[in-house]
Amino acid sequence: MEAAGQAAAVSRSFGNSAGAGRLTAGSSASASASASAARASGVGAERRPAGQDAGRRDAGHEPTTHDGFLGPISNDAPHKRFFSIAPPAALIFFFVLIFVAGAIVTVDRKENLSILQLHPREAFATEEIRPPATSASRAEPTEEPNLSENQCRHSGSEALPRGIVQDKSNFQTESLGGNPGRKEAVRPSKSLLAIPVGIKQKAVVDKLVAKFPAANFIVMLLHYDGVVDGWRDLKWSDRAIHVSVRDQTKWWFAKRFLHPDLVAEYEYIFLWDEDIEVDSFDPLKYLRIVRREGLEISQPALDRRSQIHHRLTARARNVDVHRRFYKTNGHGRCYGNSTGPPCTGWVEMMVPVFSRAAWRCAWHMIQNDLIYAWGMDFKLGYCAQGDRWRNVGVVDSQYVLHRGIPTLGDGGKAQVSAFTSASASATDRLAVRQRSYTELKVFNRRWKEAVAEDGCWTDPYPDPATTTG
Image (cartoon, rainbow, N blue to C red; front, side, top):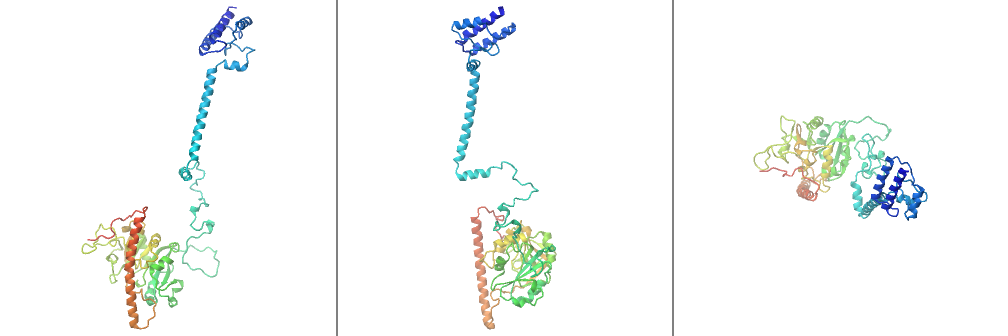
């Protein structure tokens, strides 16, 4: 009974401090302390005596409860009992949840609005610079590339399956019979010899072509006089490719019939004049030297009996190759530190030899309407696939004789009389020379304009092309 009285006293103190059955933080703390004291005293009752509860109700006080100390009263509503336990903690937790959820919704809404408000181009650019979300679409090193992507296809072949596309060709002749599907043995690498020819130089051309083995070279004759049948009696004529257009030059033919994709199978392209004697020249030995020296653009040296216009092309004795020459007096001096043509990095245009890569570059430089290519020789070093003073050179141990016969301007013309023919030839030669100088000016002007207009191109040779004194 004494313990029950203590418990009742504690219960009354809670009721008075709560005020009309409401708990505060202070009353909760007092109740906890009283509960601890009651437990320490061994009190195990969960309800107050019925008489005390009745007395409280008679006095106008509603009975109170406390979690862990006083048990639930049977006539209290469940929701009243919940809010009478610990309303501050529950409400605080509820408001915190609402605040956090609202902040997340607000941030997400702002981000979505900012994306929707982007200009279509800005949105597209944003998507482009984002890295892929996963690496699943990235091909492994051992995987085949995605064949459906257009960047894997050559321009113009997008509508075709990749396996049927052949983007390059050659001048290899084919038999009219036989099985085209039969796999042939791999052909040895060949080079191409292309020569503009007139029937007047038939004997010289015959000796020249005979020096180039059929197993290693394809021969193309560019007939500027329109005469083709006159070559049929030569034993190599049937294996040669004959192209005939009257009154056109070597560079006109080259631009139209030696496209890089047509000659891509050939290791080197020899684009020579017809008035060349080759008694001291072996093309196979020449190519061995070119490969060894890493020459992308080259020419055989000129025998000193030749018509020589630039000293760099003259044969030097006791060496295989030279890449520069020296001149320390007079006009057009060349020193050891000279870096441009005609002191170094330069060949003349009568017997140039191009690697496959160098020709692809040089072909793009040939102007459609500038048929003599004057001025282009000073720019060929840009196609040397590296330093022009290293990758351009003159081969001395294999040299030729340039006869310097004027063949342009009178090729294939009917001869009425000796006097008329000579007069017409002189007039034509003068016209050829005048146009050549005009083309030089036009080419140089176009080069300067192209350099000025191309903001993405940097000149690797900004110094003057010629060192003069």
